[in-house]
Length: 477
Image (cartoon, rainbow, N blue to C red):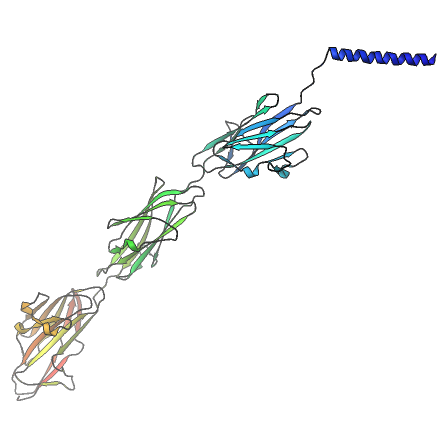
C-alpha cells in the first residue's frame, strides 16, 4: 500500500514537469541581450562647446574609450570604435595601451602586446579599435594619448567616438571639448656689444684714429615653437667710420645676407630656429679727424616674419681732437753749424746756407700751414729771391720759392724773415734753404741764428729750433 503511494507521487511529478516543458515551448520568452556601455572620457577632462577645457601647447591629452559589459551572464560580440583625432593634436602611437578589470591605469599594457584583447589600425588622424568580445561584467579601456601641437592661433579640439556593434547597432559618445589659446610666439631680440666697449652719449668710449671698432650684433629667437623668418636688420655706418663688407663675419653655422649701399648696412637672416642665436661681427675703422669725432652707432631690428619691430640699440664712441701734430723743428747749415763754445769760422763775402726744416711726425694728420719767423743776425745780408726749398731729403731737387708750387711763401722786412709752410703730409719733411752773405766788418762778430716755429694750423706753438747755429767772423778778414 505504501509503495503504491510513492509510485503515484512520482507519476504526478513527471506529469507536472512535462506540462511545464510544454508551456515553455508553447510560450517561449525572449532571452535578454547583454547590456553594453560605450563612453569616451579624457585626462584632463573635457569641457563643453560653450566652456571647453583649457590646455597649453605641448600638453598631453589622453582619451579613454570604454567598452563595458554590465550583463552578468551574456558576453558581448565584436565591438569596433572609430576615433578621429582632432586637427591640431598629434597621436603618440607608441603610447596606445589598454587595461581591464583588476588593473590600474598605470598598469596599462601596450596594444602591441601579444596578449592584448584589442586590435588597432591607424590611417592619418583616424584610429580604429576592435574588441572581439567582452565577457560578462568585463570593462576594457583603450587609451589614446595625443599632444597639443604648436599653433600661433587659438584652436578648439572637439573629439567623439563612434561604435558599431556585432548586432549592427551604432552608438556615438558625447563630444569632449578642449581649447588652446595658441602658442607663445615672441619676436626676435637684438643685443649689441662692441670692442672697445661702448660708452654713453655723455661719456663715449675713446677710440684712436685709424683704430677699429667692432660691433658684435646678436639676434635671437626667444620662442620655443616657431622659427622666425626673414629677420631684417639695418645699420647706418656712423659718419667718420669706414666699412669693408667683406670683413663681416658670422657665428659658426649661421647664414645671413648682407648688402651695403655705401651708407647703410642691411642684414637679412633667412631663418632663426626656436632658441637660435646668430652673432654678426661688423668691423669699422675710425678715419683720422683732427677736430675729433663722436660715433653714434644705431642698429635697428626692422622686422621678422612679416611683422614690424623697430627696436633699436645705440652705442657711443669718440675720437678726441688730435691737437697740434708732433713735429721736429731744426736749423742746420750746409757746413758745420758750430756750437756756442766752438763756433764755425766764416770770412767776409762768404755765404752761410741756413736750412730750416720742419718734419711732421704725426702718423695720421697733415700739417695745413705752419708759420716760422727767423731774425737774421746782424752782419748777414739776405736776398729773399735766392731762398729755395725741397721735401724730405731731396736737397738736390731744391727749387726757388718764386718758382715753386706755393707750399712755401717767404716775406722779409729787412730784419725778420717770415715763412709760411703748407701741405706737409704725415711723416714728411719740408726744408727751406736761406742763403745769407757775410758782410765785411773790422771786428769779430758772432752770428747766432735761432728761428721760431710760431704756429701750426692756427695753434700757437712758439718753439725755437732745437740747436741754434753759431758762426763767428774773424776780425779784419
